[in-house]
Length: 318
Image 1 (tube, rainbow, N blue to C red):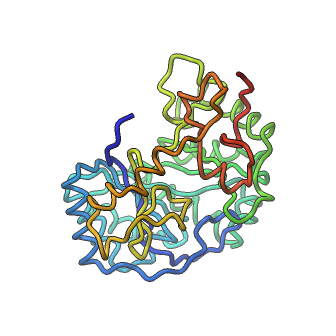
Image 2 (cartoon, rainbow, N blue to C red):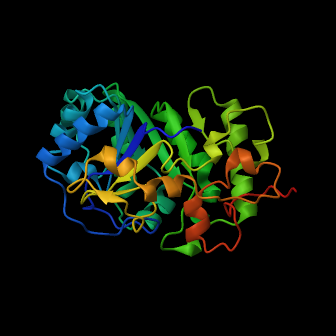
């Protein structure tokens, strides 16, 4: 795969109105000013970036977030953001629509009891479901994001029912990266069982696109299996709230540069960024090593795995 910056994950603020048990970003860094954000957007546009996904923290906490969204959509960059829903009201939805954004992602990690447990807030579940409904009714493409953790493996079907009822266009299932809380990480067996259940659900689902990464038992098929690879430093990078730039959102310490000191083009071409992209991850004895490239580097590093591959991988071959 040729290197080329196509996608940016931008943690626009570290401030948040929740303290989630599975959060990978507990840091509190100062936000960049709007003027600098606009300058960086110009640089990203010049580089040919196609998509920017804003996250946090909670992006809607920033009072100038609507201006940031407008500045991004005005540069013809596909723009989306993730929210936990707590700050979403009909007035907020109206302001979001005015920015020209088409896609919004809301986090929902289980049924009422499970979501409340993971988000540590009794209002979190109702707020998320309410936000999904408000954005959907406003005509935005709403996706729901669910991180697979031990506590929610039993209630995935309940999340799917919410997606159907609220006319969500996509349900995005994400791996849990145990940056802080290893106890939440499913075993390989649990992860595979959940994956198999979700793949079957995807095949039957007519209302919602159940988006499951093309995982390890499918890499031998004639498919586009780049979903199993790490994109960090290859086609994407992450910008932190304070301007730090890393190859991947989950590696806050792998700082390559900072947009306050260097232009994005220079940071993208730095040796540390290229080295991350070329990191020889994966088992050289595995027949699929060239296909998956060892899978998710963050999962491997933060799980404490001593092996060369993604710890969620269940393929055993030589």
